Image (cartoon, rainbow, N blue to C red; front, side, top):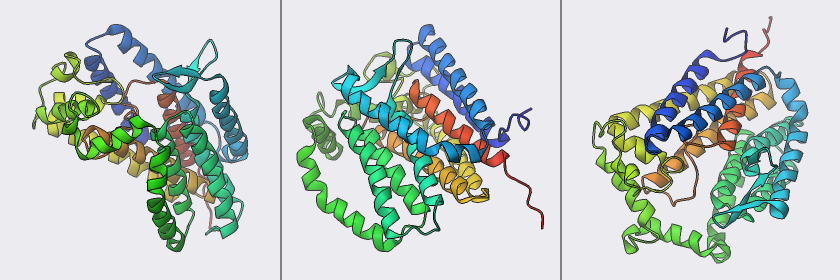
Length: 358
């Protein structure tokens, strides 16, 4: 059945297990709220349905559509600045009446498609002129997302773009100077950051400086992770979430709830599941039969890795809090749909490979 639907068995089972764990922990984090759980089931079901649909699309068609997908994503991203719906001081959503979605999530899928298409038009490694154009393709959506403002998502989009350029063969002679320039530009960027963004960076180094203010989220998150111990407190026993000490317990800080309830062993198993998914994605990229497929599969897999790393890093206090949900495990709508579409693309690349005769 899975093969007939063009679904990669190993990747599909891993995603199904992750979705099950998501239901378990979201139900607990929401204090056994049946409405939240049912809503999450609906979002996951929609995500898997989109995964199946996208997996049927042949990679050649995905390649042909890539510039149009990127253009559409860029248009809706620009519309956010004009007619976007505001929440918590940021205009990041478009409300179409029957659906409300976050266009920046679509760019996480559209940008790798566009860059893979762009680099596949010419030989690799890319020439300097093509790298310059690629920088522009990355910079425009990144600037639009920063304008919302949504620094966390902007950094993820920027990081995904640079990782794909690295996969395309960008020389270290270019990577090292860019890294040095970015480091040198940090003081300038600091001046353009909002106050709350600066506070998040400062809190990373000393969360105890303002334990009831800017450091509160980080401190409560680390308490939740540490209090789980080796084996955890058990399912439905996250005191940090149920007593409402932990903010955004169903979304950004879902890993803290998971760690408190299932402990170090459970967290290691979860990390192992994420590693399996990432490695499987990179294997699909390695086995891909065209430049476009290799770049796209590798870019999507590394983008998934970035999401996991940034979320777990901010929850455990090694990265600033940037409001990035943990992929698939967190309660969400647009993010789950976009991620599942990305995995549908990976499965399409894997299952539509042609038999090569010698």
